[in-house]
Amino acid sequence: MIEHNGITPAERTILRDLAKRVADVACLPIQEQRRQQWKRHNSLASKKPMIWLSPEGAWRELIPESALQCEGKKARDIELPLRRSLYYHDHFHDDNFIEKTWTVRRAIGNTGWGIEPRWHHSKESLGARTFDPVINEPADLKKIRCPEVREDTAETARRVAEAEGLLGDILNVQVKGIAHASFHMMAQYTALRGLEQVMMDMVENPEWLHEAMRLLTEANRRLAQQYIDMNLLSLNNDWTYQNSGGNGYTDELPAAGFDPKRVRPCDMWASAEAQELALVSPGMHEEFSLRYERELLEPFGLTGYGCCEDLTRKLDDVLTIKNIRRISISPFADVDKCAAKLGDKAIFSWKPHPAHLVGQFNEDKIRTYIRHTLEVTRANGCIVEMILKDTHTCENRPERFDEWCRIAREEVERQ
Image (cartoon, rainbow, N blue to C red; front, side, top):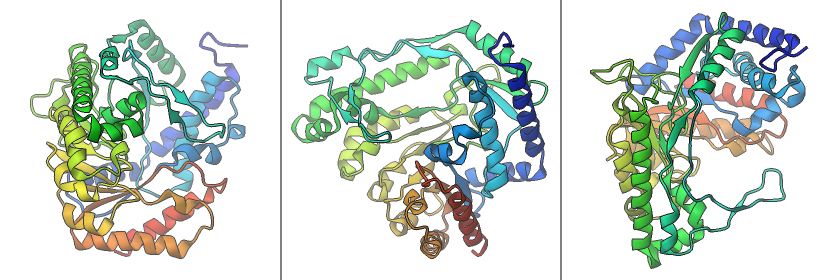
């Protein structure tokens, strides 16, 4: 027997039972303690290093499809995040928290950018793609269009009613629009022009590249303005994932004069990154990317920058971003130099190397590695978070996450 929403009675029972377990976990006192700690951390008011595990691609090894009890895709799409929350509680002893909330996303879409990337896909299941450039001459830039935003209000209402009917008496159903404000213009453009071509353009065709970045900056600004005009923005001063790690819990947002009926950029976190420029000089990073990203971030209340790119030599420029609060310190960065430069000016959002979860798991090596970063950041008065992410495999050894977290916790507590 299938219900009208495509979920069988048996699946409904499974999902509701899981939701009840999540609700029980969410009500534990430790959850509120962690929220308050994150608020102090995000306000630069606490020197206690925070720990957050983000299994990302490795989730398929922690909770394989065979562990799911529902059969239909729709039910499985609900079952998986519920089981992830419970897995966090049962296995990880980091500073992540479990919310008694089920988020429904508004049905927001757009008409696209007028031109789409073209890729050559790897034959390997997780292999890298290669670019097949679709912008080959300056005239091709005219193909780029600012997307026109649309919301299917009927679909949004359907999603809300469905969630309320399934879980509304167990979890708090919350409706969110655009709550993750981030800008990735270099990723956008290299996908169209090609990474190698963009690198060459910095030297051979700098004005062409500037024209492209000015065009994308204006298009992203217009896109954001549509979200504002259509009242599609949602607060992200909560558990919303921020930048390339961490969450948005803070008492500093929303800004003064806030109207709950209309969220403004100044009430929100926002972030940007340019991973494609990891090997580019600080001067070129500033010239071709950061100067444009800075414009887009300017209206927002709190901002973050970076992802996997090494920002060691670029922190002076990054620190000029208005309201900068969180800066990604990648596995490839020089933590000693970054700690000395950053101090307590912004969150030292450290990304430990995920490769430690594969091959031979060496506890002593991991402990020494974490201890060094904690010691050097402590000496420089840094506000530190350890975000273990980009973990696309643990070689089917889920316990390695538990062990890594145990080691990190022991090192934090010994400080």
